[in-house]
Length: 277
Image (cartoon, rainbow, N blue to C red):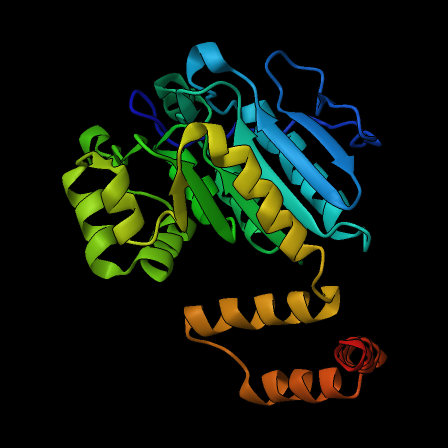
């Protein structure tokens, strides 16, 4: 939802075409007007919300297409990262319109965000501007949130009389803590960039002209990591945060990594590099 909107999904999901095969050139994710733009290149997927005249709001049809694409990405072992951003320099996204709350409210937003949260690789929200309503949960469903100075955050659910959905409340509390979640949900106050950093909504805030550079630096670091280790640690970090992790499974994953050829190969290369210095 947005400063003038709330979360929603359409009452009945239309049949979707298969998600497109995406090369390095950007293209529309679906055929409806204002659909997000996507590209996939060198192991990195990009999704750009593309309604700048409407603060990059989300449409119910976007959710179906995004959910389908996320499933495709999750099944592709070559994908190492996903970056989600918005068009322009004013707003990352304003979430849903009020009309969508009244006419198209179901659980598709929550299901799409749960799918985003569960992706087995690193996800980055590159917040090119302010973020409102349901789009705040879109950002929280990502692993990292890089924003720009001067941005703001607003969660207006209480002003609308809307009790937020379970997944969004969970993400707010596990990512930001109970006190921050209470302030944002129960007062519907706008917070500024400094507070977004302080409560952990943003990992970093940089000048707008440096956002692309910092995203690229994070991607360069991610592409040097071992995908299996990232996948397993991300899964277990989420379980620990939610308070229901399986310690024997976690320890088994550690043992498996110690026995993996990937670890042996990487450490052997690193030791060889040291010997050459």
